[in-house]
Length: 54
Image (tube, rainbow, N blue to C red):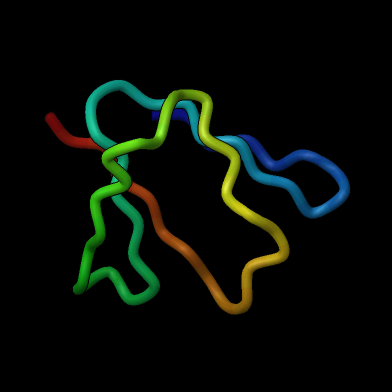
């Protein structure tokens, strides 16, 4: 997985498998329709964490 910060305030996530996101590292939501590279809607309040799995 690769996370790239672009200006202004844009993030791009490149991944293989299924991308999941979390606001707290405890509860994860699979983004089953996300395609790589994925650009989250911006701006995002707070923090978002991403992980990829198969």
